[in-house]
Image (tube, rainbow, N blue to C red; front, side, top):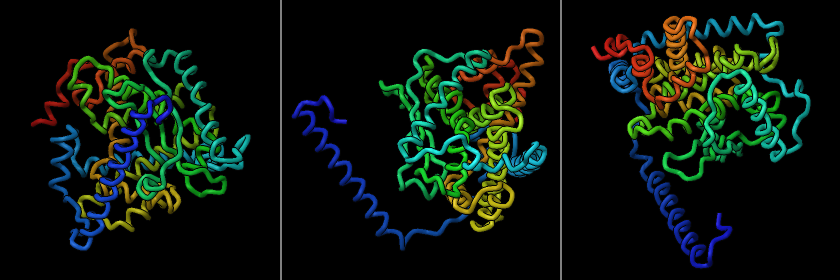
Length: 370
């Protein structure tokens, strides 16, 4: 980071770095000292949960309906796994990979190298307009500090006012013998997760949102839209032909949607007080098809942020619902790529608002606000 700096600039940088580290460690020490006085985790309860769904996320669903959506989608994706020519393809297996990277550096490069073919597919099929200002999307190793609550890693988009348009995705530490779902999936075929985190997923969508002329739309970060778009993109790429029938990538898409559906049951029941943490872990393992390491991390992540785990399936469901209505409205003029362009050009707004904009139909948002 200090390459090209003068001696004075380097000294200023190092002083700022040291001050930041001192502050971070001091904050950690204060938290640790206060731990004996901290209250134990307590669920927010159904009344507060429903308030958040309605007044913050602007969802046309309450907790009971969201949980029902999760169960319906879970049943569907479990069945679709069973309908694969070889159902075992839904469980990532590095032994099926053409080659296994020898080390972490090779693993990260192999992961990142698959992005070009996905971009070519999007362009050749005219599935979305990729703006010229998109920066580089990189794959980096997940810092150990994040492993307990983010077993699959997470995406870091370019900052809203950053001059550097690059973004990156943290992937867990490479281990070819790992039982971690995300590592096994990344070795066998990284494209499903790469599409979610990179292009056309989070990196692309958030980069476009950052460049909108309207300040409110640039600033708004509705998680249901952000995660719903990325999850929708996984299956959209499969349905439009990127992943062959019966392939490991297709199996991954189904398993990823299956465990995202399981997330809903965990989120709703954990935060309305109906389940314990261990019940959440077991549900992820039995219903979602995750290993214990991934399941514990997912449950821990769910406990830290109420409603976050419902964003994926709920957002995808809203986008699919909007896609059908948009198709009916456009008739013979419908083009899938145009729908995607119209969808993402509004930033990360609640989907009930985007539906109003695209269809000139406020009925959903009016029902939410009653």
